[in-house]
Image (cartoon, rainbow, N blue to C red):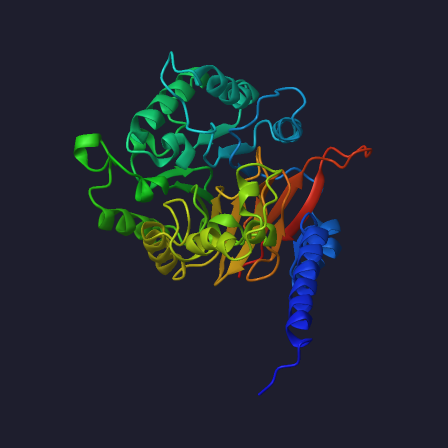
Amino acid sequence: MHIPEYILPALLLLVVAIGLYAWYRERHLRYKPYYKQKANSFFSDAPSYPKQAPQHSICLIGDTGNITDAQNDPVVKLLRTWLTENPDNGTLIFLGDNIYPVGLPPIGHKTRAIAEKRLKVQLDLVREYPGQVFFISGNHDWNKGRANGLEYVLRQEEYITKYLNRPHCYLPAGGCPGPVVRHLSENIMLIFINTQWWVQKGVRPIGKTFNCSTQSEADFFRQLEELLVLYPQKQIIIAAHHPLYSNAMHGGKFTLKQHLFPLTAAHKKFYVPLPVAGSIYPVYRKLYGPEEDMSNPRYRRLRRKLLQIFHKHKNIIYAAGHDHNLQYFAIKNNHYLVSGSGSKTAFVQSGGRATFVHEHKGFFVVDYFNSENIWLSALEPPRPGTPDKYTVAFRKKMNPL
């Protein structure tokens, strides 16, 4: 059978046209917030947000470790506004990756000065804050997951607790896996877990030898489930670094540009088209991936076990960072947040199971007025030229699911 000569050029033209359309659509929509259709009602619900101050406000912010400008950084200004508005009724949780790129090196190391500078921007913000402040560790705080990561995270813990004079603000302490509980009130409970422990190379503290309350991996999951069973009447927020749902890079989502021009990851001007070879790296990260990706077997096992536990319960809020954007998922009676755009932003894909996503700097806040009136807000720096203190990119009353 003879194939007309015009077929192959036509097919090539069609492929190019589809690619250009996909690229244009991605570029056009990328920086706009995405709302699932039902979630659009948050605009009409917003006026019912209470005017009085909440009984408790919990700020969840991750991946703040790249901030160096203490005065002009937009997230610093936004965080300062939240701290001012919630002086006595607030709890601030840093969700890990507190220092880029490798945590806190030893004194004398060539990157020690810049690491301290980045950390002090955050610490000076909260040093005199009368509310509660907590830090957890992320993969970058463990020397980016290298085998000597424990010494890096212990060094950071000691530095933060001494600088702030808050002996128990870095949780779980000692690099232990957790879970660690803090009761904010009769109705609100925080559970801190160290998700990096599960994917970390080298020494991972556990058991009495390291002064950890958890004796084994099975004991960790048993303790966590016992806490959820013991306090069904409480609003529980679980603070971690690694997300359980994500429409971004660590969840295996990549841009068309990353498939076609993979060298731009090394330098933004390396526009060398590699349309087939360029997909090898994104496909690898989607199907298997390094330790920081959801597809990695160790990460996948942790995620599966946690979700098996959470799916038995209702109205848990699981807050993470890791991916540099804002994401909210309401799945199987629970709430899953990604609040990792404290100092960086990166691509996040619209749609899927997400209720809201936005590639923008900011953070999530949970405002607790009473057990029947809990609100989730995504706060971002104000738009240029507006008198607003901040932009509310998303707001939802967290009715029981």
